[in-house]
Length: 87
Image (cartoon, rainbow, N blue to C red; front, side):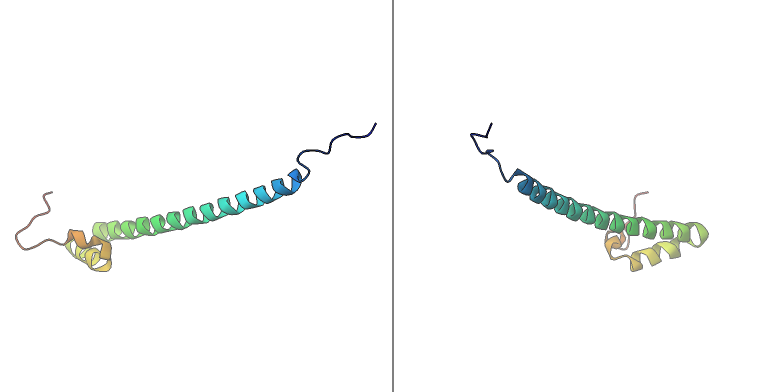
């Protein structure tokens, strides 16, 4: 018995391979972006831990001032004369 109709989707396997390759590439790119974010967050945690060690092992005032000068994102910690931290 011969086939009367050709399969409707004769290139399914090719499209499937292309789809899975594209999906794998996209997932790889997303994973690499997440790794970059995790690395950045880990660097911030390490910097904060170093400040904590400095504070607990030395002069708290000197360590705090050093942390402010080393870390540009700590600009919000600088206060004007007469202001307090409110702690």
